[in-house]
Image (tube, rainbow, N blue to C red; front, side, top):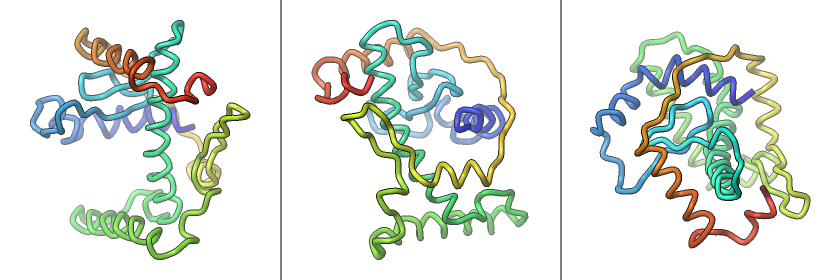
Length: 189
């Protein structure tokens, strides 16, 4: 479901966005050695890392696992935001300035509520890894969002990567397998 949403969002919203243009033109000024984590629907870029399409090597499996862990953090944050503030599930039929205010207000409340309420985000809300059983237990928001969204058709677009982007991904894969390895990663792949 999320992969289909990712493909649709990439083709329809991300590629023509100001964010994508700023990243492509190198005018966003990301901190040095920063990347954006993405799923398979996105193109591999020097600033945008996506999983290896096939995982024939241990190093690539570790990279895909570590990238997936990072993506799950983002998915949990946005998933919970959207399920808590359901106005974000649909097109907001207002002036862009008002839509910006609604989204900013929702994000502000989403960041403030966990600091003031133990009930806003519970352990069941977010994905968590059961390392002993080698599984990721999905957070409750995923079921709520799937029910609310229905299914989306896949989008198709070109995904050719540059050699430099592949070299950066390979460098991260090497780090994750060696100096930046975590004790449980082999158990989870």
